[in-house]
Amino acid sequence: MIIFVIIVAVILLTIGIVYLIDKFVPKKYKPLILVGLWGLIIYLGYITFMSVYGEIQFNQLKEKRYKVVIENLKDIRDAELAHRTVTGRFEGNWDSLVKFIETEKFTITQRRDSTIIDKELTRLYGVDTTKDIVIIDTLGFVPVKDSLFGADPRYKTMMDIPTLEDGQKFELKAGLLEQNGTNIPVFEASVSKKILLYDQDKNLVDLESEVKSVEGVNGPSLKVGAMDEINTNGNWPKNYSKEQ
Image (cartoon, rainbow, N blue to C red; front, top):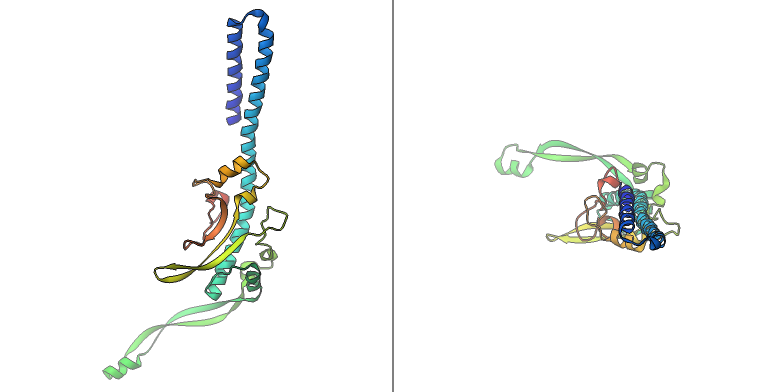
């Protein structure tokens, strides 16, 4: 639609210039002026078209790369959440996280309500007094790897940025964030947009790094989790992924 509008505008501009030349310019100068103007119009039209078309291509490539990267970030988040479930904390080292996936297990438990004699109240009142309790039974164990990835070995390469061929990895951080006097585990895995779009027009990449939109990936990086807030979500909108 944008390209169509540009073409129509160039055509209308050409018609207007030709009309003005035909009306006001002496006949002997018309051919030279017309050739020059047509050349200028064609050149400006080409530059305008390539500018718009270049931005369209940039957006298409950007979305394609983002979607591939997001799949890795979702795997990283699943692995980190599993690590917190088993150990109570997040992991900030790739080798340790992979080893955890390969060696650790989830504990399968079952909660059930029960009633028992409350010995202290029974002794205090002299009659049998009961209290309700919750009993947690351990039913078994399931390997983390089987639960998250099955037979797929992609967890071994989830730390590699998939759109690059030089083995660059996501930046991974983990630690504790104090909130209301309590230290809460946090993590963040991220990659700069400038790294993902290293081969694209610098001006377009700079604009993309400053995006603030509900339909865009806000900020200078694509990431999951956060080190400055309690958040394990990704910073991408739903149009980039079927699930957050």
